[in-house]
Image 1: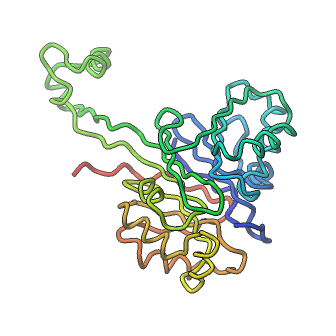
Image 2 (image 1 turned 120 degrees about the horizontal axis):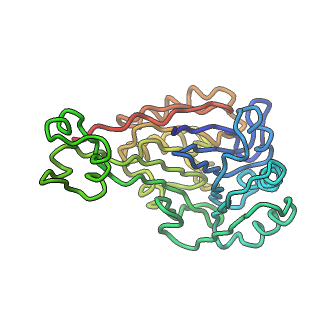
Length: 296
């Protein structure tokens, strides 16, 4: 199962209808929790997701609306008896703050700290790129390796069935039949998470080829000067980011409390999003991962 659970969509301060940030990506048995702001533990209850589903926690930066929910989440994981290792990724410059947050949580789970200080892989299939914010910040990208989809009719014609199918996939050929003869290329899927940032090369690299792109949309186009001042994206800039990367689905979030109606922001993003579909996220939305793209 691949699904994005929206736990909160507010920037800086929560509102009556928007909690602080929080995003749980369920991906093939893993649960990646991004930027758990204050109240994330309670939002998880409302969303019907369990602390035991979390295997990694990824912080883009250590501003409070992106990390103050960390102690509560970790304490809940301890209370629920999480036995598997939990990996925590964060910018190395936030070490002191992260350790302070971790220190007030229940110290029972197997928590493994992974600070990073530059672009590159931080875990299998997971990598980071630097963003341009008021403090050091990084976005995340999860990449599924390309593979191949087996074609049953070709397998049958080649007389390959049962355990031999697995052998063929593992070895690449079987009894003179190559894997490429009974399959077609299957492009790997990509997820990108871009939070607090001005437009920058790192954001563009993260968005490149993303099937699902989560991007902050703190300000409307009319408030572009504020966006530039505070190093954030406008809705239009988020749309342009999706278009430049050829993203399939753009999820807007991290909204300023000045906007009650999100429809204008979604329209501004859509106007510049190229072929990407656009959704203005709401708290507790559950967004299925888009279908796999066809090979050209």
